[in-house]
Length: 175
Image (cartoon, one colour):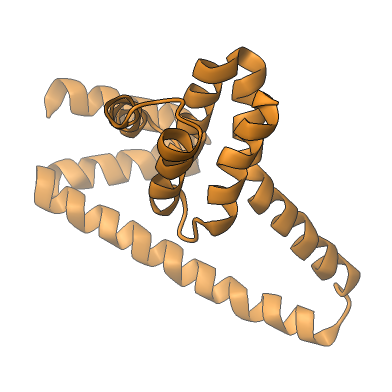
């Protein structure tokens, strides 16, 4: 029965929490604290603080921790699955529809229109990162990192993960 309760406790916020993890936090808190009584408000706030301090989506981290706290490894698995299940089902349904109509002129036109928008959004994001780093560390440090990253990834064909690790090391020692 506890597995079903865990599933419901995290599935409902997954469906109703429009806007991602931060939007579903009050819903999860209502289920975990008020409805099922697995935690106090203080314990939940500590889990929330811990989840915010770690990288990755907050909703899945909280689901994993709370599920494990309530019912061990299986409870964590059920909770994480319940958190991602609404999005998973919706994505699979939408992909099924797109795949069924992939040869439709309307779908082809839609994907043709989406590509430039994605490119523009990525460009805006890159520009925002550049301007923030320019403000934070200065022009020369930003230029060194940008040129070195371009050279390593485009000329030497080094994997981006190594470039990011190198930039972290550079920033840790020189900045």
